[in-house]
Length: 245
Ligand SMILES: CC(C)(COP(=O)(O)OP(=O)(O)OC[C@H]1O[C@@H](n2cnc3c(N)ncnc32)[C@H](O)[C@@H]1OP(=O)(O)O)[C@@H](O)C(=O)NCCC(=O)NCCS
Image (cartoon, rainbow, N blue to C red; front, side, top):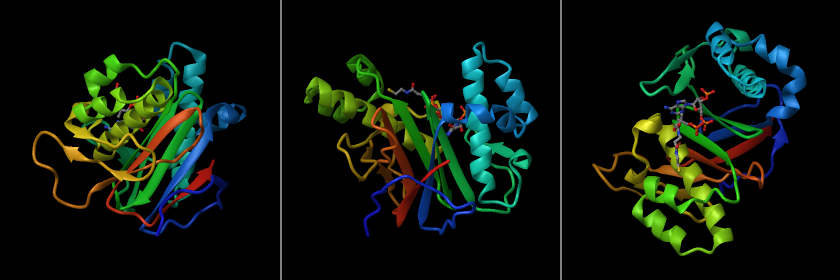
């Protein structure tokens, strides 16, 4: 069965999430600015404290909106109102639901005006989105962070294709380290991803022993042509449902 996502649609209030599927939610942050106060009212004291540390109002508002939307999305899957959700954090900061009575896994990524939230049951996952900058496909950055095979693949491309491939590579690598929960503690040149569009697997672990168990799969979400994005999940999935918040 093809797992390629189709189109983004509005969701029912409580969309059923079977074990084999992944739900990804997309929101444009600016569209939710009118609901800023309502979203802020669902944040925890710690989130308010973090919001208060932003220097610029626009960045603070974006933080409030993305955290408020995350709470709104998660509350659709559990019997808890958005303001009563509590998080626990992994050793490198990956958030999870503190209540262990459910098997819900999630991950969020935001860039520019876009936020994506991926949700699944009993399945680690990571998501990443980056706004594409025409001059952002920086080979020096690639040489610093990417694996040798990825750098070679980039070098073979012309400048237009290279920009797309650079951001595809970046978001896939980020989605993988976010799925693992490693964050910046995992060297990004430790493993390789494909630079071609479409479903693929994290290619190889270059240093250390490859992990036993099902492979890590990468999926394109295509949230917006101005952004690159990637979803990384453990093992094969039956499909991805794409929802607009
Ligand atoms: C924090 C990190 C996990 C992702 O950061 P990012 O890509 O800047 O930001 P994203 O919006 O995609 O993800 C942030 C969200 O991921 C989640 N998160 C935090 N730590 C995480 C971890 N260890 N694992 C998975 N998810 C994590 C949180 O929900 C966080 O949201 P918050 O900012 O509201 O707290 C980390 O990998 C990072 O800083 N990466 C940047 C590395 C880099 O410079 N790469 C260059 C490639 S060329």
